[in-house]
Structure formats: C-alpha cells, structure tokens
Image: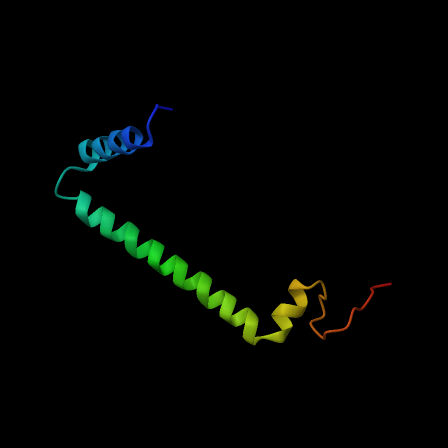
Length: 74
C-alpha cells in the first residue's frame, strides 16, 4: 500500500481517530485487547484439552472412532 509500515499504521490510527473520536478510541482499544487475550486463552485451553483427552488426539490422528485402533467402514 505505502512505502513504510509505520506510515500505514499512522494512517489507520488517524482514520480510527476521526471515525470513533478521541473519547471512544481508548475503550475500543481496550475491548480489542481483551478479545485477543480471551481468544488466546481459548486456544491454550483447547490445546490442553487435546493433550489430556485421548479421544480428541485419536480423532486428530485419523481414527474417527476414538478407540485408538483404525477401523474401516465397509
């Protein structure tokens, strides 16, 4: 888009400032930060569940029955 990533970020910041105003911008930034934090926590929780639950690991490995043995559907 532009020559410098810094310029891109600055332009986006100015547009956001004009669109939302100086009073709502901090609240918007806080909400986005909390959403990202919650998303990362959900990702970490999901990976912990996979490690502790052998059925999920079996399905990810290609065994849809979750029993640990490959079963073929005729």
